[in-house]
Amino acid sequence: MFLRRVRPRGRGRRQEYWVLLESYRTAKGSRHRVVAYLGKLSAKELSGWEKLSARLDGKSPPMPRLFAPPPADDGCPEVASVDLKNVRLANLREFGQAYLAWTLWRVLGLDELLSGLMPRGQEGVPWATTAAILCIARFCHPSSELHVERHFYPKSALEDLLGVAAAQVQTDRLYRGLDHLLEQKKPIERHLRERLGQLFELSYDILLYDLTSTYFEGQCANNAMAKRGYSRDSRPDCPQVVIALIVTTDGYPLGHEVFDGNTSDVTTVKQMVEKVENDYGKCNRTWVMDRGNVSRENLAFIRERGGQYIVGTPKAMLRQVRGELTNEGWQQVREGIKVKCVRCEGDGKSDGSETLVLCKSEDRTAKESAMLGRFVKRMEEGLAAMNKSAGSGRLKGVPAARERLGRLQEKNWRVANCFEVKIEEQDGRLSITWVRDEHKKQDLCGCYLLRTNLPETDPVKLWQQYIQLVDAEWAFRITKDELELRPVWHQNEKRVKAHVLVCFIAYAMWKTLGGWMKASGMGDSPRELLEEMAAVKSGDVVLPTRNADGSAGVTLLVRCVTRPDEHTEVLLNRLGIKLPDHLRRQRLYAPAKEACAM
Image (tube, rainbow, N blue to C red; front, top):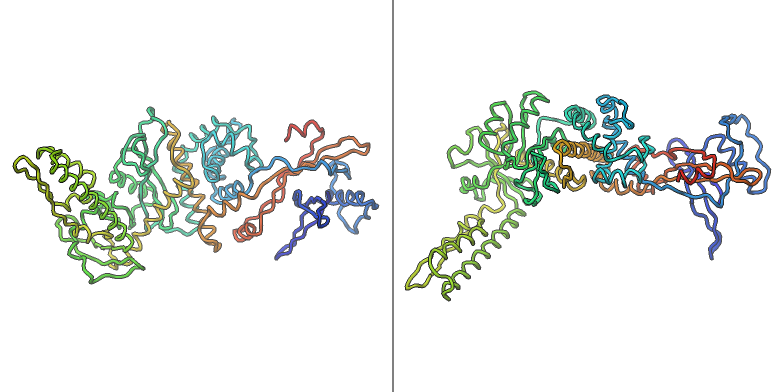
């Protein structure tokens, strides 16, 4: 083995670092391979390596360089003979993702905020540091607190970045950290709004509001919030809680609340509107909400407070604009989507100052038409089976036939009113006939209706503002899929709220990275960058030494960081992130201590 100095070519300041190489023989000749990157070396270390190299080559030590600064006297021998046969790499850890998350934590200023909000007492690890461990773990490898203690933290480089030993990261400490973090919910939300606004120049005039649910594993008998309700996760068998999220038009989070699992969507709007008004004041603000949050009382509440809205409407309201489904007056928004302003034929369904926008999507038309066709086919097959049973005498009596018809209509409720069914009994035999008319429903396939009290009457602009609600839905998708919000394993009400808060902070870190990448011309896909950073590791290069008499000397340990590949290095350069060459250097003065350190 031998050392080599590497001087990468590039712009700016010239850098150099040292690598440990191994020479080995092959059928095609001698080859070299990298054992470890040693990073930069100080003047004394450089002098020592130069003398060591000269001795290995059988040459005399080099003469001192003119005007060379004297090496610092740190009490160690000038030259240490390294036992090159026993040099090894140990304690490999995940560094890239943890370092990136730690950088985002500091960019958002959460380290300084929580250090001020949660002053250190007599606890072994500051609660602000415990909160950082929880949020960074949720960002990198979403998992339970037990998994963080046993797997994530010992295998990551957070011990070097945060200065907390793996033995100090325990589930009890993490659980208590959740309790202390929940107490700072309001200051954290307020700080994130201000910090994200400074970083990305956010506007709070248009806010997107949506809800989702997340279910529990377990009965949660001691949690009053865990109740069964409408499950967005298709798990009606499990208790759940409802989560409301407010984001900007670009998807940056502003606030969240946790409600009981059986809470109806429309009952949450007033509370969230008041929450935003308390934080930002009463002013002309536009709310964009899905049809599930819309009610006449909610819209009147927003108008009374001087607010504006763009909301979806229930499907039933489409029947009142059936006369507008002509080929006239449509405006093309983009390929496959067209819109136009319409008038409502019903009384009392729409405020006189509102504008109604009828939208039609070709892709949505094809999907809903196919669904309607499947239900029509199933309904006809069921009626034909009933008629066959009646003809064979197995179906007897009008009451039994109507009961069977009711079950069939319940299974195919989407098209139940498209069939006019007659059940007659003559001479003890049943006769079942039906008339099918699904054209009225077919005409409404792919259509949806928007309503707004904005002075803007251009249907294209109104549709573009409403479609931004996808950012709120995408926020939930990231939180559920990437950050694994579901399922919730905690049984305590406060721990459940703290778990959601940790996911909220991790989502803010996710959006910060996405905005950072977008500003650097790298798109908006943090997952790909995280996968690239997973290849960056940290490890200990163990250098055992020999004394002059041949006995074992001290063991030098250099904790280095592997160099990323060319593609990852280009990404990091665009973001302005520079990885450290090494994390720590350590001298183990007895061979016995070496085994303990590993």
